[in-house]
Length: 438
Picture 1: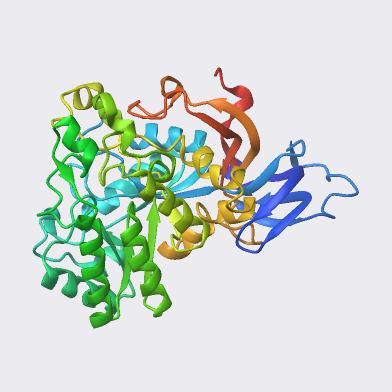
Picture 2: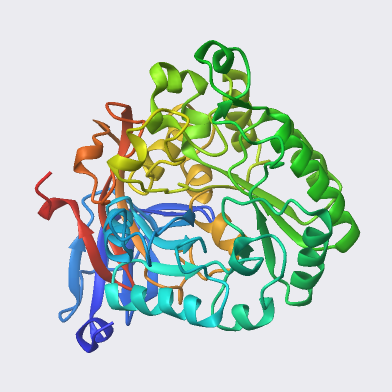
């Protein structure tokens, strides 16, 4: 932050203040000072804003903590033609996201201090959203030798994961959970039993009709069940990423009832789409884990509504046209999601499954609590990372307007509600819809 930004006080007036961390929902104003939230409430600036303070009129719109996306593939270093830290930051800002957790699977795996520091330095240079790197669980994501959890934690790793590669060996996962417990670190698993997960779409009748190899729901269920037993053995902290099946959700629900330190997230495509989206061999809907049956989609929606699923992450996975416009079996897995995370999450609110505050919590304070990041709240003294939005404004999703370098989204023409109007990091505006051309 420049000296001028550091010294600038900003008043956000005429706002509907929403803080899911505290349950706050009132009309009022907020003051940022030096990149922090200095004050807020319904009586603030009732007598007018003092001179010397920059005024931002929210015009009655919602003001909430900026979103935290806890699962993002940055592609830098190594695949900058698909995405860079700068373009990902621009896309995130347009989506109301002020913090992202970067997966460790770029061409230079985040398995040592130098790689973790590189991502942190590039994020500082970009001066967009905040980037928190994951550390790899194993060297080169090979599932064998553990990385230095303590050292990587000291240099900024917020948790440990092998990204889209499951820790298949039970002894390796046991050791990882035990070692991570020493540093109170979190292990994040891609929950697919790899010997069952060799297919390209959800296993079942549609896969058979299309002549494609299927991935059974049991690949996810078996891995989660095994890992829960290892959590019982070790007492470690465990998080299952992008849960997609009713069976796995039920396992996690029961584990939580037993008091185990288990959390999970899902992505919007698992509660907005089902396996029918890959009909006609639509590779833009090819994701890992795959889109599941309608019954599974409904179970994910219900798991979010009843609190079993703790957070929603975009699982932003950018790919260029050459990686996606291929025969289905050869196309890469993954879709972009930074700019659709918020409006798709708001479906939970618009379908009356959750209140607006409860929906916001899934993309703000809850992922912040899981990763133990200071974010996701309007508490005084917290970073002034904010989003101003209209939750009801309708639009059709158009990937051609995305700021991401890649446009691989299955949501073209999808009706959504909820437009981001302004995104603020440390009190500084990094996105303003009013100045955009589209």
